[in-house]
Amino acid sequence: MLIARNVTKNYSNLEVLKGVDISVSKGEIVTIVGSSGAGKSTLLHILGTLDSPTGGEIRINDVLTKGLQGKKLADFRNRHIGFIFQFHHLLPEFSALENVCIPGFIAGARKNAVKERAVFLLETLGLKDRLDHRPNELSGGEQQRVAVARALINNPAVIMADEPTGNLDSHNARELHQLFLSLRDQFEQTFIIVTHNEELATLSDRQLVMKDGRIVGETGR
Ligand code: ADP
Ligand code: ADP
Image (tube, rainbow, N blue to C red; front, side, top):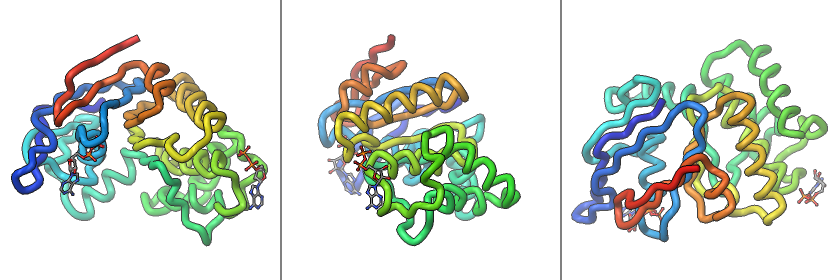
């Protein structure tokens, strides 16, 4: 599903990624762990096409991402990759339902189909009674679940999450983990997650340990 080969990234003369190879299968939850400054966020951004590598290549669903630019790249990203960050980045003026619909409208899908799927996702994530709430009317855990629904709206090949539980208390963090596991089990959803949360890391299918720009270890279940 996702294959990265010999990915490198330099910032002027700083080598942040020194040749990373990763292969992720459909329906797998892969976590990336390692100390601060190891290059985890940089790698996730590059895998998610938010940033380009200095060298190497990435294929997502057999598409070579370095062949994409401008509008084509933005379109590919919107359709095939979902993002979840530490902070939800929901638009404050829009309801939960509208926030979830927006990437679907941008992708050009039929309005009614997008709305139906958004309602389905929000209901699946336990937010049936929150459709018309704005982000500031929702709890932290609920806001993050709306962000998960938004990430899922275009049925992406992969969800990239950067410290998704970083801003949640342990109860809400645990619920978000359970949600990721059930999305994997129900829909074969693939995840790549950068996390400091050991519980999330141990629940994943595979943990990659990064150090100093390289993957130095891997543990599977
Ligand atoms: P991690 O997510 O593992 O904490 P990062 O990927 O954020 O690591 O950062 C890895 C290294 O790359 C750090 O030394 C950081 O200072 C450097 N770095 C990240 N982004 C930039 C940038 N835009 N310009 C220069 N250096 C950067
Ligand atoms: P959690 O246990 O998920 O942290 P909270 O105790 O923060 O939840 O909130 C409990 C309920 O109150 C939530 O379902 C949320 O929708 C609602 N709520 C929280 N903050 C607000 C707010 N500012 N305005 C309206 N409703 C809110």
